[in-house]
Image 1: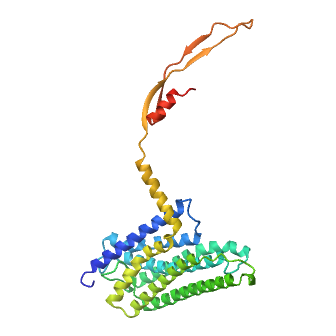
Image 2: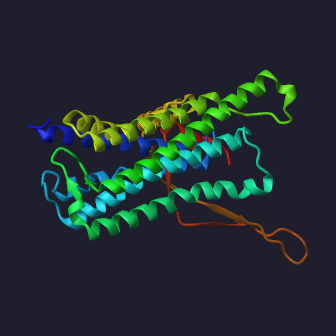
Length: 336
């Protein structure tokens, strides 16, 4: 890869593009399909953040600076700031999803008055974190442009400040550990509730399938964080390649974790069948015709007797009929 950096760049670009398309399809299916199970708004928020997080990866590619070791400073700093913000907001959104899941499954009891404001807060907090990190990294990169660099075999510019990298690693580590501890507590609590239901006052709706998906996503973020830490403290070509590939696989893996469900499969199958049937449906034929209307008016004289009826004919009225020949024939021969 060191002698052919374009191979790694092209592979990462292709993986991110595939993952981006997968997230778009999943979000469209969850939004427009009426037959799927209702998803949590916090989960949808996580998928939107994952989709938006793929956009900064393409800055250098579409600007034609992907193989330039010294791209424009503004472009490089903007990309690094956005990516650092995305990296942090992803783990924050994952923690928010864990909190929302254990509250909805009643593993943690919260008063109804307080729970009314919990979900809006879980939806807003990731974006506040994102804005704060982007502004901070952008200001630091603008003041120290030499600390932002672009490696030849990578899609993005990265911040090289040792102090910032260490503080970011500590924050992300704390958030991931908190998410894993909360999921472990919820699982243990649910198992205890199922074994001894009479000892608890409330029932739990804990879903181990959903917990496994959320836990898998958190573990994937932990693995990505470990590779980031190893690469920052002990850089090597193998760790760089593994780190780039793992970052590129994140969108596709996220879509697979939350999209490979039975109801999503059935929804996709129905959508494909409907599209196929619609494409095979014959086009409606248009037949031109004319309608002539006769009106008979019967009048009465002063003595109450009928007068001679008069008939008026209106001008033919051109009409068009759309449909098959069978339906058109039926329309012509059916009595009024």
